Amino acid sequence: MTDKPANDSLFEAPPMAEQERMVEAILFATAEPVSVHELIGRMPHGCDPAEALVYLRKRYEGRGVHLVKIGDAWAFRTASDLGHLMQKEIVETRKLSRAAIETLAIIAYHQPATRAEIEEIRGVSVSRGTVDQLIEMEWVRLGRRRMTPGRPVTFVVTQEFLDHFGLENARDLPGLKELRAAGLLENRPAPGLSQLGQTSQDEEDEEDDDQTELFED
Image 1 (cartoon, helix red, strand yellow):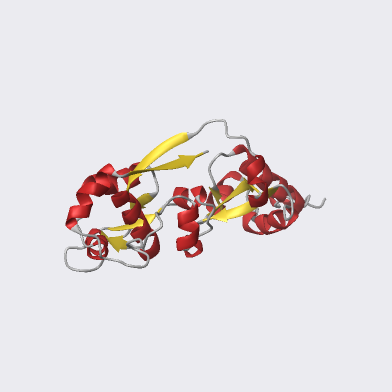
Image 2: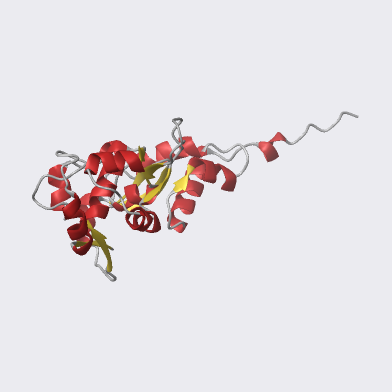
């Protein structure tokens, strides 16, 4: 009597088409972008979500919804040319002082940046409240400490920041024209972008009263 061969099929990964369906279901059901590492943890053993994402992204090309990469994670987002069709149900108003906007711009374009580097570029000290506000909005987070005397902490923009502005990574940050069109900059040279370090200490007090409204769907 011969031994019955082991049923290896129990340990085989599902077909790629089925893996695509799994990834699609997870991304549609999750509000936040999902990383490949998270997909691996949710899918059956042996699945290759990275490969499934490649096929899935191609399948959604030209559709009303696109599969986009945000930082190191993935999410479905409305095609950019169809954004005007989306009805705004709720508008959340967020106010940022000019000091906060300029600090955010410096971090985004010069990350990872220490507090001392931000202050050097702006030409004024950065209040703790300014940085705390950006952290509370989840647009800025702490980065790695610099391997320099004192080991100062650095600041970098977050995945939420990239997602809010539809960016895959910080290298896709818009230029001055796009920032002004989005209402993030006035029609004047902005510290951190073109004329860094030319803001006076007297302007710092005025900036805290000069509020700019940012809107989020």
